[in-house]
Length: 276
Length: 325
Image (cartoon, rainbow over all chains, first blue to last red; front, side, top):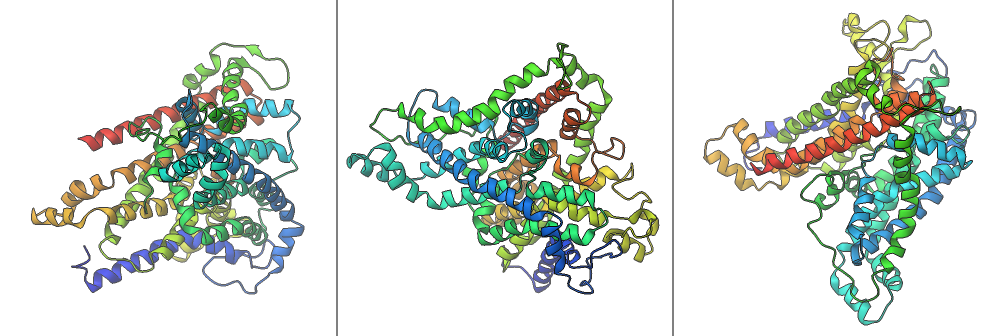
């Protein structure tokens, strides 16, 4: 198809590509620029020009007085516990579905898959009552447990596919050596599936850091980063510069992770994070 | 990009394509041990997900404020779905949003991809990164950005005006700026939310379609040209069939995503003005926490789930039948 491309066509295509890229990032660049404006209601960032002065102090104010330090700490604590837990459970489950035959395996697997499209709204009412009864409202645990329970569907699907792509000879060799299934998993399959495990960890971390709905429903004093941002934004509607600084703080870890793991990240997103 | 096996997860329900591949079994050792490996994940998933579906069915038969003992009302909470305008309108709003969240990004992404695929693009990785950013960054952050874009200040001193209003006024189109702001105006609030969703989704479909078109053998296009096909024929005979799978993915993901819209409503409009941007998830949340209609919220959650299942199933069947024609 490249043969007949004229110069004009090439120029037009790049123009088009640059244009759509600008549309895609304009609101994001705008909020980045706005975060450096002098704080206070008088400032009106337009997003088309650089701020009059670069007020780095906005970030300090948002971090300390705006409590973004606390919100980010919550997101981090939850992620640090939740990501390894969810990934290990997914490895175990995915391994069984990929390599073992047991009665009901198919049914159980599809029950997990169902979790990919059961909307959180369908279970949120009883979950709230259950968490209240268990005394878990407003704790780290409620976020950790519910995030793990929400992520294993995807994780198991993902790890099953990864383990199924392992060459049969790997498993055969392990069997000839008389290795137990446990040993085979950790000595052979996990090293083989390292890239898939890394991708899963990155995606799970992003989901956990970005958790909003569960924090909104189940917490009052342990806001995750995005929940903290909405609370700050609605309280200080006129502090556009500070709100923007907060928004940048919330977005930055994920943007960095995305830039580093771009390929894996995109592959994972295409897999379908259907649940909000 | 080879994503088909992974993409299948999102599209699996109701798809005939699923489950063709049997796992290669690890021979030897009692297979019962499989249960032990699956148990930890299944227990936590069942205890905090599946179990609640059953509980939800029970709660949905009661009129209950969450505090005092509830009253058994049978199917009354489900009947509300058909009789209460406040519920019906949430689905009408979601249908309107689908034009922006699903149809527009598909149309925009497809036309851009068709145009862009005619040359080899240098630096595609870089552009792909930029185009994916709106999807990577959480809706909460991007919605905060759009609150600023849509700000009109409402004519109040000290309330800053956002870029959209600034640009329109500079162009002499100030009359297009609603006095109560795009998000506060009854006519513009829902489309304004829609434009936000359109912005968030077009990059995804563009990149996916572009990758898909690149995989279509150029011999098919050459053959079409030899037959004297014009742009439309080419699109219908070669491009669309070649993109069948990508179209299915984008359609299913965006339609299901729209049905579950919540975060941006929370940040941008809180369901308002009035109930102009109330969507099913917002209605459920609001019944649970604002109006103390816990039984009704449970019923609406289950109805939403059934609708999501049905739509996923129907879309998959539709796309697959379209493919076999």
